[in-house]
Picture 1 (cartoon, helix red, strand yellow):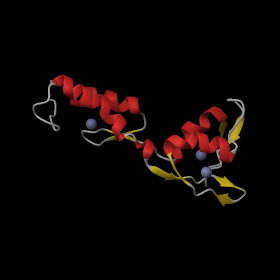
Picture 2: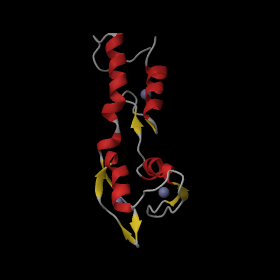
Picture 3: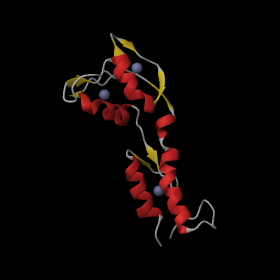
Length: 126
Ligand SMILES: [Zn+2]
Ligand SMILES: [Zn+2]
Ligand SMILES: [Zn+2]
């Protein structure tokens, strides 16, 4: 049974639209995060929005070069080695713990599209 928590007069199309938009509205991209990237034994400690992080890594921490270049994640306490192309996602998921929240039951997921799938499987339909 679909949960009509927004407005009982909403049509199915309205609900579908909301479910489509809600994960974006809930996306944690705009929260302030603290950068714990370590450079020469000093923690960066700058606050930034998650969406700014790729640029911050590139311009302030020198995460540049070929996608497949070996790279060490210098995040405090991490120091895992990986390819440069994996760093941004790694930091997002492991260190920022970016999570997308279901707007209806508030269960949390690591990917936006997983939330959309969850919403359509769990909260829509009859
Ligand atoms: Zn930083
Ligand atoms: Zn790391
Ligand atoms: Zn849910």
